[in-house]
Length: 308
Length: 308
View 1 (tube, each protein chain N blue to C red):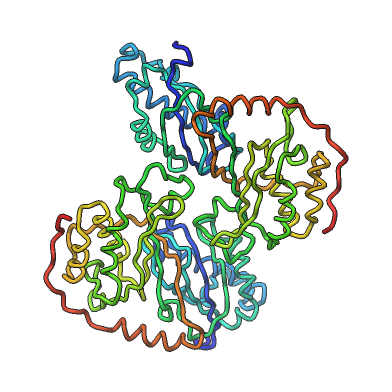
View 2: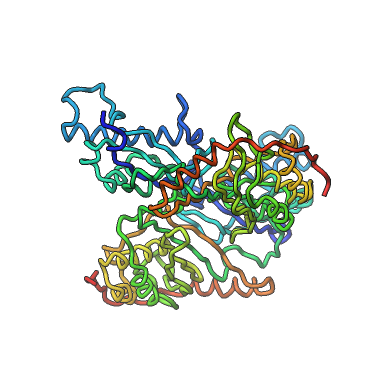
């Protein structure tokens, strides 16, 4: 098998309706986005390899996976979370990339993938591009229908229903305190040895033209369940169950408040992953990998959920 | 049974994903929006009637339909067509309306209806309100994805895929000729004895933020398959298969060109039905019923599909 460096790297731009998937990451026996795309690429690659004589005639056992690497994404979404702007990369054996052009692969993917997942762009990129580590930031949207008169049966799959009207001004006051570089340990499921320091770039609620409350939230990267936990805290403020200052105290406390609610996956969509210009892909990877190696910041005392 | 005039009239605001329905109008053995809503209202009404002693104890044969009239809508959408702003009215027996309040019914509907249909408003209106005949205009949107890089797996159910890029400027030039009061016989499936004269108020293409081509089209009312046939003619222009002036010639010809294509139902959504202020509901009904009684305009010669 040739060295990875001689393989051709492809960038894939992907959207999916998360309802039918057990998240991005492959799990044995479960339908995941990663497996679905890898298997479909293998089918396409197998056909191209056979018709170009790259495998011995009659070798029915060969499954095509040897020629196609693992699909690595920018944001490993949880079960039920949607994506409109997911980005991934995959390395293709040069024997196969010589006979399989990106536009043809996109066309074949459109024919083979089911309706709830689409690869809308396939392009050749330099090896300095890494879907995960070259990314500048990820942008998510969380959508809530908090008014029964704005229910839209056509968008219901990407919107969470909420039975109390939300005060977006109070939620935005609370959200402002989260902007910037902080240890978000209070808002994520920590993983041993991993930092929970992140730089939150935007965190703001608006009403869209349908009347739904939409959180626009972006950060260099997010910890596990961080967006849905921050959303849960802001919803507590929007309902009047907590004050905006409670969110700031929870953040500085650094411990997970047991009253914090993780919002349902259905309302969450990965909208965009942004990258620097091509000449800065390699540098960005070095910066990102260094930041991720930083140790945890020592947590302070925990504030409790106070009345507003 | 009491007179219709003593029944209470309710206005229902409805949205649905048309994919799972054989259109609005009830058909034996098929799942339609009309049947689904009528049956669900009957279930709610039956429960309310039984628990308030309005039917004899033990009368298991009684199905509740006696107390609830037919659900009459503003736009009888075809199979597969969606609605975000459908409006309907229904008359409720006063014995039942005395024990069943609109807000409670909306709450019960939300619990009983499946995810692809929602009644987002139930309110009491005067009997001068008629969902069909009091309407000022209907507004539809037709959505087309004509660029594979803008495919959105989350919105695919309400967007038609098209494999050639469309020229919206040419389509808008053609669309302008359709605005105003015309006999649209060339763009609809005529029904014997019914006029095909309609007043087209808006007909304009834009690109939405996702990059999809969206037709905004409104008229006092539409004939059968009129929106999808007009869209098909404009798409022929957008592809360069026909000139903008061919659309104007087809309209004035008054005969259906066999090359006219009816676009798929999937891309079409009834977005809005507009009504005048309450004091003009009765007058509007009289105007609409009179207009519908107008005889067909005599058709002229048929132009053929010319090159652009």
